[in-house]
Image 1 (tube, chains in turn brown, blue):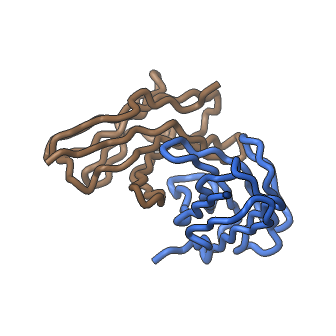
Image 2 (cartoon, each protein chain N blue to C red):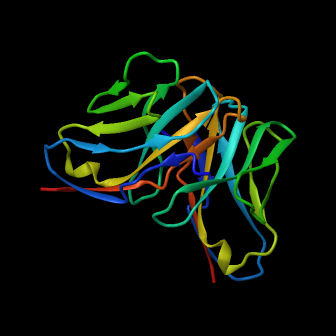
Amino acid sequence: AQKITQTQPGMFVQEKEAVTLDCTYDTSDPSYGLFWYKQPSSGEMIFLIYQGSYDQQNATEGRYSLNFQKARKSANLVISASQLGDSAMYFCAMREDYNDYKLSFGAGTTVTVRA
Amino acid sequence: EADIYQTPRYLVIGTGKKITLECSQTMGHDKMYWYQQDPGMELHLIHYSYGVNSTEKGDLSSESTVSRIRTEHFPLTLESARPSHTSQYLCASSTGGGSYGYTFGSGTRLTVV
């Protein structure tokens, strides 16, 4: 069964606007972490933001915020004030602490920022 | 400045050749991982290690093998490359739990012709 689901293969956003990338996850592990990574065309993985399963507040890192809805098993990424450099593929990932700390990835969402 | 290094960055090689993809990290992390990623697709875990002399197969079956003789070094080997092995291979390391995520290398883009 798919552990991480990203239902948006591609999205277009206007420069300076906000965009929300959807992510749902599936786990029975009570202790887990949720990550978002950015992958530009060069191929490297850039860590953006982290949310722990026991964290009470939504994580924020600069222009990135994570909308964590634990009961719905949802961890959407919000990018505010989009920039042309934000054009990339974005991956949601989950680490299950009782599953050898392995990191599982979703299929990714390609974001294209238009000027 | 990268703390985890992968070489080569790009590799084009003929079918049947033996290849080793190098991965080294300077952070002293016990946990290291290899992921395989086809263009525009998700990452699949193919191998991981929790420390010296520890290696495990990941969720995606792979014909490659790995070794972990030193904490900082986690090479991946293909004994006989085939066109089906053409992909990007990403190495990562981690301390485990908590907010410290995985640190990824720049990847090796392998093309087998």
